[in-house]
Length: 353
Image 1 (tube, rainbow, N blue to C red):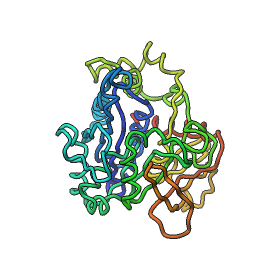
Image 2 (cartoon, one colour):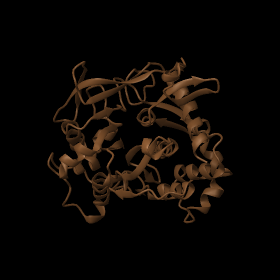
Image 3 (cartoon, rainbow, N blue to C red):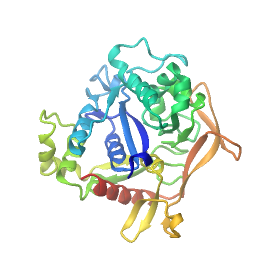
């Protein structure tokens, strides 16, 4: 694909090593596999409780996912800029975290550098909390509004009640995002029943086994997944990928089931549809101009009016009036997950080589 036609993307992710939730590695792989996306930076959205071991922390000590990105760089022959964000939630709606330690500033400084240096506005994907983008917006609101075409946020719930996981990581940042006026493309992680319901029209969740998702990948990419999913502590981070894509570590990962939420947002950003082809379900570019009439699993972004309250709950209604916010919708049904799994596997096999 011609460079001029690609979509500049800044990917904000709570990817850790060892993983806190391994879907983040699959999200990164999806970004890398979509040729329509030009990855400008990966920003690590970290939270203190995951960086220290119990009892002070959540469970085990983790690092930001710098190693998986460095490994992917090696496999692709690229150099993806990375930065690490602040560890603690915003303290107020005006907190731009400029008083935090220097080691917590690199993600915000990198985001500002990318926005200042680009002649083409960028998309921002968020698969964690909104902390990095919110703090950046509070430092330079005009710049962010001018240079961000859309915020593809995977967080929150369409229903009132308990806050969804990603929102709990920084409720104030989530409020800043919704109050910013930035164009939000909202892919809620939870709906009326839970964050794990595969049925609803607004639901993004689906799941599949690692065996289904990773079948057919080259050994070195299998090793990349195995290194991350197993939380490997091997110091030979490049050589390990040649070894871990086969044998006991690889085999022991196959039966595990992986919950996913963010895939649709990344694929839709790239302008692709979920299409049944003669080879099975695939993520394909829009074929309507060619006169083809493929079978689709339809999805869409509906215009909404949205208001966030003091507790980070979003109230929304569909609207026909001009609005900058859009909400994900799809044809309901649990079979969506089987179609997504088949299509994601094909995307990874076709483009990770």
